[in-house]
Length: 283
Image 1 (cartoon, one colour):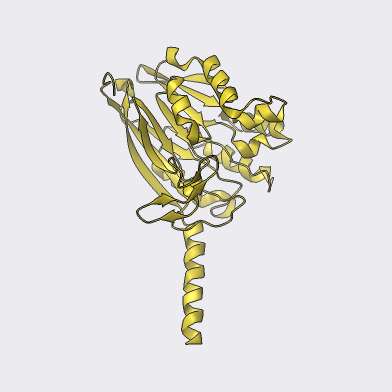
Image 2: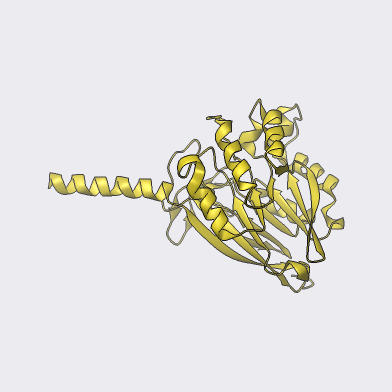
């Protein structure tokens, strides 16, 4: 009996290790009202919440998965680094190699917002070939069509600099300054998914977020157990969401932070393929 218990415990332990280190590539098709026809089939790979994790030596397995997905752009939606384990060289090495696969766009998450060296980190990312979109937008052209890729800095950056307003007010002002409604098909990178209604009202057509870590523990038929900013049984824990004509893709992320274990929740790279969809009044 003791041997059987030991075997079961060993199996559970190995399963937990496998479930936290085994990469999953999650393909998602996104119907996008207002997407220019030239962007039919546009592929975007999303890496979120890496938290300095390494999948293979120097993230070789993660980079191989990205290369195999053949994205036209790579989106880094925050917490590339971890404020508790500030091995920034790991994050920078990954970013530099990812930029050799496809153009890379990045927004800071709450962990970068806590870094005393964030300004130097952002400058190093730019030097590595990554576009840092902290409250700014850039155009992207494909086959004669044009969209906009915009990024929201995590509100923690402003709060750390002395802005004592709540996150919603900070994000609202940043969104207003971006003037997304006047931009061609605004695709928004924003680390925190719980503010999806605010992003949609601010004019975002398509949002990519992370932060929720898939709810950390995923229960069959229920979903994620807990996410920061959302609490128990979060509404936005991973996958594709719709609000009116806006869409949001939430990555379950790759690494762990304060809670070091995922259960039923493998690390994932999201690969989103965009398709134009008709705009419906009152949708």
